[in-house]
Image 1 (cartoon, rainbow, N blue to C red):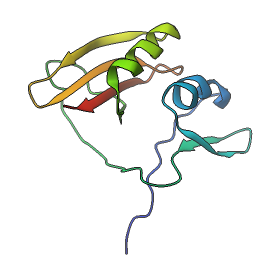
Image 2: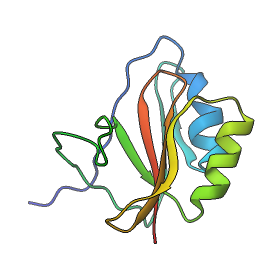
Image 3: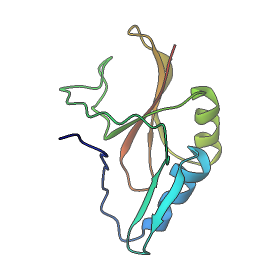
Image 4: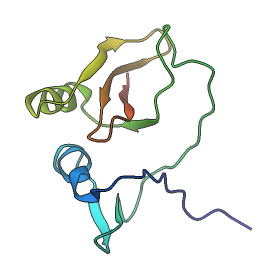
Length: 116
C-alpha cells in the first residue's frame, strides 16, 4: 500500500476566502470547487510531508502549516502588501532555511520558507 495524497482540511464558513492567500499569492491551483469545499494544490510535482513538533524552532510557536516557496522574499512582500499579519521574520535560521510566519485568512499560523 502507498499513500497517494495528504490533504490538510481547515474548517471555515467561507471557503472562498482562501483564494487570495493560497491561489493568488502562493500560486496554488484551484483543483476542486463544490462551493462548500475548495481544494488548492498542484496537479503534479508537489511533495507532501507531515511534521510533529514541540516548538517551531528559534523559540517560535508550532505553525499549523509550512509552505516551501522558491522566493520567500517575494512571498513576504506579497503577503505584506495584501495586508496579512506577519508574526515572525523574515529570518535566516541556523538550520538552513529563510522563513517568515503569517496568519492566513482563517487565523492559521503558516510558516513560509525557502531552503538556503
